[in-house]
Image (tube, rainbow, N blue to C red; front, side):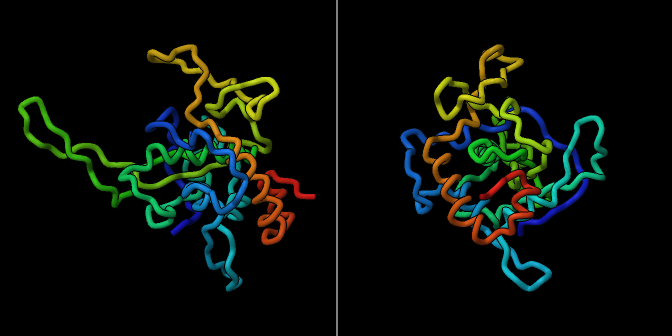
Length: 223
């Protein structure tokens, strides 16, 4: 069940592999949304008013998290649990965080997702130096989403830049360690299709089903 919770640390850094990099994806049709897009944009919940709402609306309830300033017990984040994922097949949500972030980048709204392990997460077995199977670390099985600011900052996302392209505003996030040190990170790159679907969803769905004031709080102006 998707919920708003409080407490815990915000995980930073790259976790897992590439997220939403679906090469050749140029479709603007909402019927071609990926499971990550569907999870974020189509999942619903029953509100206290007895009506059905889109989970996307809950983003409006998140306050800005400032690292080193905001106390972990004070900030709220959205939790997307395993049963909330549409057609989820992977054992871990390691790459799902990047996929959600690619969607935030495509929509240009100030939120970030990070994978984490719930208390019910399974542990991945590993083999030690003697060839014995031992219980390893917990799998990441859930996603935390928090707010990063009042306005969208493209430099927070691992998306390549490109003058005259859909990535024109991006390209500021650089690897600070490892073999890719100094290189622009691209593991949260969104596709042309994602960008088109984001625009179409906002115009065809959000504008009709979500109150304009809620969208404004999220960081979206709908004419």
